[in-house]
Picture (cartoon, rainbow over the protein chains, first blue to last red):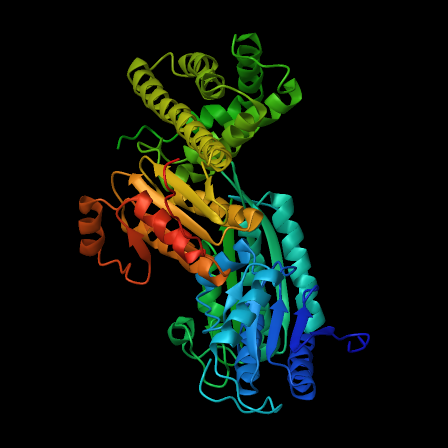
Length: 141
Length: 134
Length: 288
């Protein structure tokens, strides 16, 4: 099921129990926060177990966007979904290091495919709770 | 050292910030900066621009193309009439936040550029100038 | 620092400005160092006029004994711009310096006429003017070389980027053998292109081999660490191999912390680890 993109919203795709977000435009702050909201709602609604945030189209990631991504991943984790960020460009990566911004312990991958692999691998290794509820995860992943 | 050309742009909102980033990117490309340097410059501009919008109600950014002994540079000056920063040294240290939440912005911008200068007066405002040379 | 009597050089420059300008231009246009295809006569006249005017200001009280004297700031600034401009057009260092030196003949002739009745003053005046003009002429050569250095540095950086020897050792594993002395600029360029190559080839592991690097300083070590951190941010990793005992000692003495980074003594060890991490296993088959 695909969420209908409104005029100013970043679309969220559902692939099995993984949500895929592809950020294609430079976001202004409000758009980023709206995305965060939408993603949280979607995780709960779809019982998602994994989230892939694809930022391969972003040429600039500043400290605000970096924090939004990091916070989104942390929130998702609390809701039982593991987040992987894919597609950080070399120039962006080097700049983030220069900036001193850390993405915390968010796992990253170079492509969507590798990101999906990471999710599969991580979830295979993590203990799964019985039942369909995605909100409480036993132990940490 | 001389100024080859200059321009000014007002930055008061998130939209203005996006526009500023595009403008700074274009100037960086025109001056001939490589991709990594472009990214650094635009990111630094984004940090300082955001500070201006979030904590000073907006301000003005001046862009200047510099020339000095055969090398070219880009200088960005962020000027606002906001509350000013009481302790600049503290603000430059990372993770600093008193609820004014300047966070990584100032220190980060300094690390990304070749030259950095700041003047701030409580009650009058703040001016930050950053320069990157090719 | 020496002085001359006040009504001396600047006075002559003021009273005979037009004739001096004409004479000097005449010298320049007749000289072998003229480059008419690079600069028009009008422009030459303009530059000469400006120089004479600034020279007059600089020597208003005394002829500066030191080229860094603040009184001469304006004339130095003008020469700096002039040199920069002419470098960009393709003038050689001698052609640019000749601009200043060619003023001597016409100027000394004029001084000789003015002070013909006072040989002692004349000699002193000519000597000090000569020294000052020499310094200004040599200043243009300094500026010239600085400009050229910057151009060359930039060209070298571009060359380095083009000749980065990144080798694909295996599917998903890159190696970059660094050779020679690493300086900060070179390391940055090389690291940048390494990360880009990783994206281009989909490599998740890069081995940076520094066997061929004689010494590593703090800056280079920091750049290496930065590269590894950036690679990890991208979802990849870097190993550093070829750390010789001498370099290991230097790194520890510098207080650089490489504990978070995978390091191996040889490229072979690093490759074995990389293949393991990438999920490969190597078995030797029976001989046929």
